[in-house]
Length: 368
Image (cartoon, rainbow, N blue to C red; front, side, top):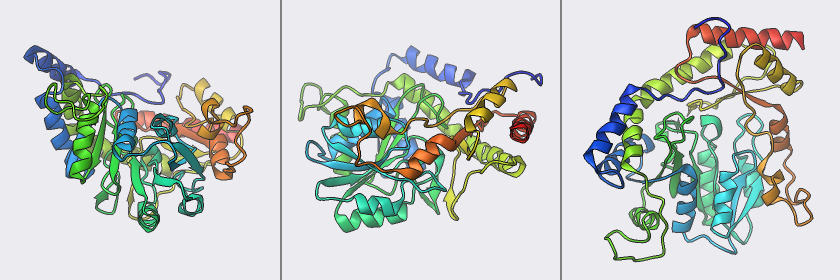
């Protein structure tokens, strides 16, 4: 690669082995909810550390179906971060419940347990932490809060495949762990999602919900949807899963190299015992974040702001008069939205590309 070739913020991996997996399944004629889906579910259980996995067609469906399967609906509230992708809160609204936004920890960008505890009220039914950027939320503290208050803990693990605290993976802490297989995630299935759980009854309900409420054809037991994963997608997912360990170690190594070389910015904080899998490598730039991003673009270095507008400031979640809801005072969320910048960290980066990223950030910061 020449020195002036742009480096994108993300680079999905789709290679010949993925294409061969797709062709193999298409030639088999078993393309929807067949043996590939079943095998993918069984194999992903090892990553999530859960007894059951249920595949669906997206990470958003994983969140939505899990909340439905838990019986949440109108009158219920779910505590979520506002510093996340809108799908986190959308899933809550889609079941008729209301998101309650709690602030984040300044170092990790994840839900602050103290803010969560303060947000628990008489209508709270669940807590839904997001393992943002691939770093587990403070699950020990959040689990304690949920158990004390009798709440369901649902993990939004869309960005955190193979992340863990100690030897316990994300997806194995709450009632359900919800993963995404969108193309830019640490592994993908072109598009898809998965719910992990140790609750056999919850898993069965999820299987009903994803398939029009039936396990046997025309024997509908409940009202369900069609959010099945195709066997084509599952075949890609299985192939990607076989390389997830290698890719994860590469992401961690890339992140370590960036942290060692970057100057003048705040690099990611990883609590002791936490396994950060670096879906994103996110720095803080207390001043001139947007100017730094523009300077990096000029130097051919891609970057991204996740997330420039907190969810509570998006149109569907504003107050009736169109202004931000006065209930949500989230200073750390607002600060992160103004300061966070994600740099390339994907596993196919070369050493030369990593050096270019480091040099570009350092030179740009020095010039600002």
